Image 1: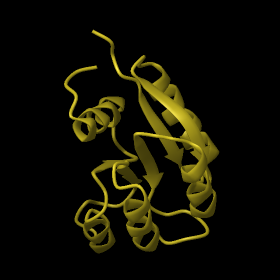
Image 2: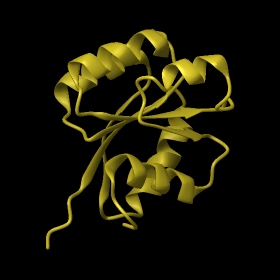
Image 3: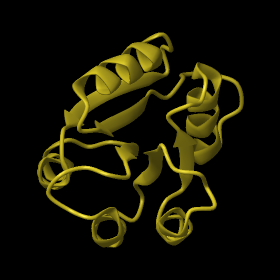
Length: 128
């Protein structure tokens, strides 16, 4: 039985956080970060160039507003799973609104296992 590799496009305006998340995912053979973006404008361009299964994006980045960007992405890429990283609590009003388009949420204060769990959950996979 062949294992499918999950391809992630990672968007975050903090290079150090992107690097850390890439290191975390590279520990798992079934997960591959296939591209990175540092702002919403760059993200929209990368989506047209890089096929991915999951978009993992920060909720606050330059050159856009996530509440405007997410509906556009979901309309253009309905099969793309979206996981949002946030420093805000899940009860924050903009997070609740954002979750109308996102498939998962993981906080920046989460542990490594939480990042893996949200990928498993949105992909419907049990235990990589």
